[in-house]
Length: 556
Image (cartoon, rainbow, N blue to C red):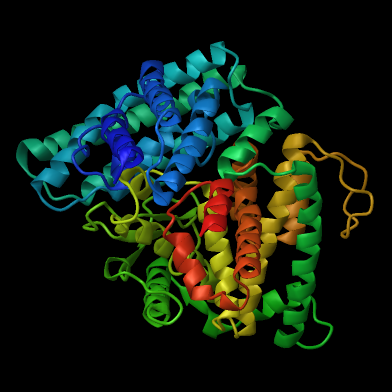
């Protein structure tokens, strides 16, 4: 480890006390009893650390090729984090999936619950929750006064989430958490006080959003080209031509739907439509599971099977990574996500499903590819393997570096890879993968189109409203026409796109860049190209922006 790695490790040591919830997410021990400072001063302190670190990076020369990659990764990631802060994006961020409120709510999902120390930490955070929410209100209020404010629609939608989280007949999140813990005497009383306080604070935050912040919110949800360009670069770790990417989205969706029609013919018969194949699969009892617990167990079995079969054949999976937990989230937001292991692997990597209220039937054909996306060879292999590589990567690379285009692009690439490796020979499972790919292609179109308010091409392959300009209403109509998911899930998806510009396309665009990186490696290596070696070399670089990834791979 040289000077760059020392600087990176020192950054982590300074960052963790400033962001204790982030420390828990990253698996850094010692901060589970703190929530951190969500006030403007707290955000400014983190920005100051980033600014100082970048200044030191600029004058520090890498001593090895590995340090050169680490330096480029840090400069790219930290530089864009600082650019977002300076543009007011960080302090004003509020949408249905990402905000300071979501961070401090979701951190409880990752905390240990067994033993007095673990329960005491939960009690401490519950009793700090109201203060943290008050600080967040100040930050959002201050950002709005400075002209940095989200859309009114997103504020109302997050307020609805607050209602669900605190509803005794809904998620009742904080009281439900306490009910699952074992505690007596003063600690039990402390937990109950904390749950009541956090519940009240969350409900009051929803009221604040409706009554104070929403009247200040933007009427238009579109981000505009300048804001979107920064967001796109941040989520991809790469600069792309947005107009070319928008046009490519139409081509890619048309290609995928053509392939889906061919698979539909295998399922139902010649001339069958995609919807007819979906209906046949949904009505097949062998492809249906009743009850979310049974569905979780099915996911766990499939994830374990994939790890067992891929290890030693297509990947060399480290021992610590051969364990994954499939979990049901304690809320009903409709999200599916992965959380990485702790630094010492005492907390394993986990695949989460926040099942929407009322959903009790699950179609396995849709979700085989999801397990590969969230598990192995997707997020779990990528994230957990990075955490293992202490001999190759510094602490910042292992614990803090994340780029959506790299991570989500790899996970989507992994779905396609499993098809290449023969794991989706069943036509129903293959259709499920293609359907998921099609949704990701559709949201490239919708996300860029809505936020840039682009014209829908007159010659688009779907004959969809040619010549009109995108609106949220047209986005909803297009997604419903091209995505086969329940309306409640799709509504959440559309709200996510509108509130988190640039993130949703990072999956499909990230996959596109990963595939191009593979083709570039094939061209460089010629007959010496080996797919297993390519994957190992790429993953051993850790998470980084996609432009730094391509540069690092070109030097291998």
